[in-house]
Length: 602
Image 1 (cartoon, rainbow, N blue to C red):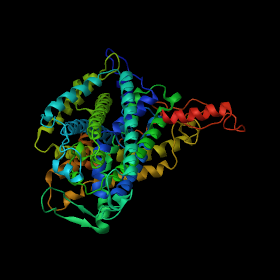
Image 2: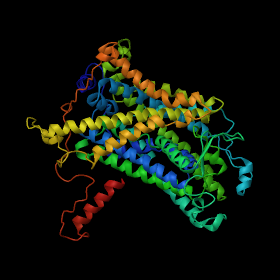
Image 3: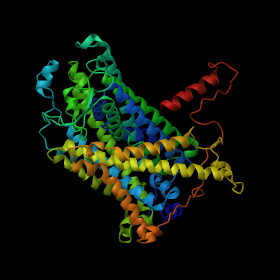
Image 4: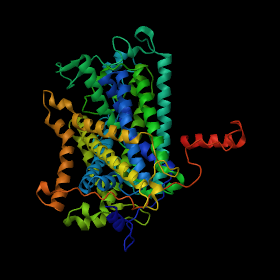
């Protein structure tokens, strides 16, 4: 598979088809971080607390982040050793089956354009910022009204304007694009850190009376560590329908919360997608550092953000209850906005909602980047396309003189026009179904990545023991020049595979509980059918109609491209004291300590 990729992507002919390797480690760091921080943390955290309660919500985020850690380490190690274009489908095609690789590429590309649409839909929703006056009166807010005057504007206006903005930014050369994403990422980290501090201060000062006068009042009766019940199909009707309580309700609430968390974590694979545009991988160890930094930042910020938000807003707040499980609402349903409103703070709710719009927009910018790069990698492989589409494939393969794949950016952007679904009567429900579909497609990709890593692990282990290979030390995971290794990674690959498989199968278990919702069922499971249909189509083309004659076609190639090894010497991200017998305040030792801290902070 890589042979075809190299022949088509990296051979210069009368047209330019290569991307520009201009991204530095700090660019990749913030691009991946910005992709993960869209509207998920700000709008989904309240939903998670409503579903599971403040304590179980933290457990749900921790478990979801453990899956992310497992998958990103699998992808990171393979990409660090073989920085190929399109690693999300290249490695499955190489180590599992070519048909599986192509199918993974197509559903992942579609998932990212769906996420682009979801982010823009969320932006259109966020402009409908308006609190119910009865709610403001109930919580004692000093003003009778709170909202923006933009709520009556057509959502199509915001969709059109922000689609244009996102498209224009993605036409920038990748170096300038990376610089812009770096700025966006720094702003997001600073804002989220301040948001966490803001909620800690509110909880500590308790500007309004709370039950029992306890700082953990939302964790105590009549609320508690977990929610008292789980409404299977929440609605605004007088009859809530089926309600689950006890241990069964707690378990299913936890599982539902984990499924809701997964959308918030989608985006960490950006680290791998940028591999073809990374600069000097051996020297800067970009894949290793970006993967580890992303894991730490996302996990810590999500856990702390949800924890402090849950200290100030009970899980049965009216604006949280109004969030249906399969819908995404506006800023007045954010737990952070509600914390400010319940504490009678002016201005801050509008500032928070404005930042949520900025965050969703920048995440949409990254979604278009990811989808365009995946499609460009697919365009480099003739076998991934039907015969009648080869001319289109060649056009999509071309890049500008600055390395921008203009054709794939345009096609992905046009598919993003699905965001005009915001003009439908119930855009929040449409948005929920779109995100469900994207999450399932991404989970399929994560499953396949973990399975690919298991095959990869055994293949390079055999190569490291093969004395006939001249460069066998490059495949030795215990060698100091091996680019990226994590402890217990094989176990984590199995863990990630099994967990993602369970999430795919039971991501919307509520669809099987009366009353049955066909739209919700289709949104949650059509991605699985599409994945296997694509595999079958490729197998029919290569092996014929008889499934009994279908054969596995995996090259298990580890020679092309040659494996990357890091520059000999001190590894970045490791603390090394030049004078181990001298005290830490020794000049050389102190410089090493500062360099180590700066490496992980920048």
